[in-house]
Image (cartoon, rainbow, N blue to C red):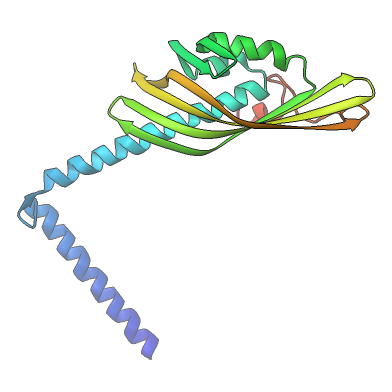
Length: 206
């Protein structure tokens, strides 16, 4: 009986709150402030969230592009005139950076990149971001030896939106530290493929 009473009270409160909200929207004012101000604020928030989602997808696409050796996917994170500065190792165009790491990745047995702790700030058609990067690189430098290098670094990126597409104008890669493990014998074959025959493309071909 008590539960029924509480439920009835909740229903009445819900109806009351709904009525108040409807009245606010019909009047077009909240506390003497024009409702259009709230509408504009909501649109700005929505635009901000959409931009962050697009940028985050680009960041993750770069990791996928490297690991699946999908060069076009890796290229698209930069604008055609976008640049990259990998402190101590590379300075040039974004596409040139992809080509540079490609030749090295081709010598490896397998590799896996994870990008986390992504922070993004959007200002209209411009944005900045910082993300943490972990890259595990597996190699067989000799028949009786296998190595795994783990790089930990960060990307500090400047983005802009051109023709409806978010891409990098400038990337600065900051290395933090690297560790290396060595084992005997060759690395075991993996189920992953470093091309578009990887099983993931059957489900997520984008």
